[in-house]
Image (cartoon, rainbow, N blue to C red):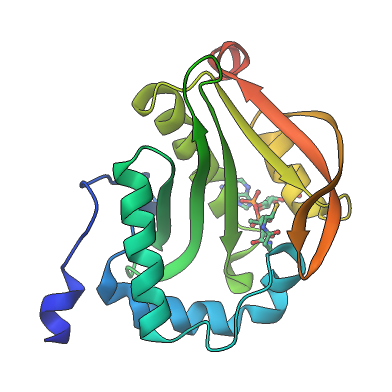
Length: 197
Ligand SMILES: CC(C)(COP(=O)(O)OP(=O)(O)OC[C@H]1O[C@@H](n2cnc3c(N)ncnc32)[C@H](O)[C@@H]1OP(=O)(O)O)[C@@H](O)C(=O)NCCC(=O)NCCS
């Protein structure tokens, strides 16, 4: 049963692959690896993340969440990816392309996290590079946005390195770790990305 579940994908096959890592949508069979890495990183990620419900790491919640992400993918509202190391297929992070807006907007916003044991080795820089190419060339977006807390220096540096520009401060922008908190806004229009890519 579990063997079968492992290979069930609710998403269109979308693999973003570089030399060291692969980004792909979640599968139900990722639950154990996902729960293990998220639970181990709870203290590391929580200060930069919305508060999670109790029992956040159960299979039931993971299944609901994966089904919701698949519906959002189908509707063109969001694309969720997990990040795996090619070397041993271990799950080391996540990348979400959220709030995909069409019409005159043609933008989306990114959210991401990395296992603490893999920080500082350029994995998120690599993941962002592939995600941006997918956003602009695969989803045909015109702009990609991101935001972070003023004291999240690591995230800020990673965004600037990827070509984002700081665009201002949004007060009480997102409810992070249980509080509505001010965020610095970052943006990258396709015209700027094409110059640097
Ligand atoms: C934000 C976060 C994803 C950044 O991860 P990270 O590993 O620091 O990001 P990077 O991939 O940019 O790694 C950067 C460092 O790796 C090092 N590095 C090693 N090999 C590298 C390579 N091949 N390429 C690039 N950098 C490399 C560099 O020294 C670089 O540090 P520097 O820019 O100070 O020189 C991570 O800290 C995290 O998950 N934080 C908690 C959750 C969070 O904040 N999410 C975002 C909310 S807005």
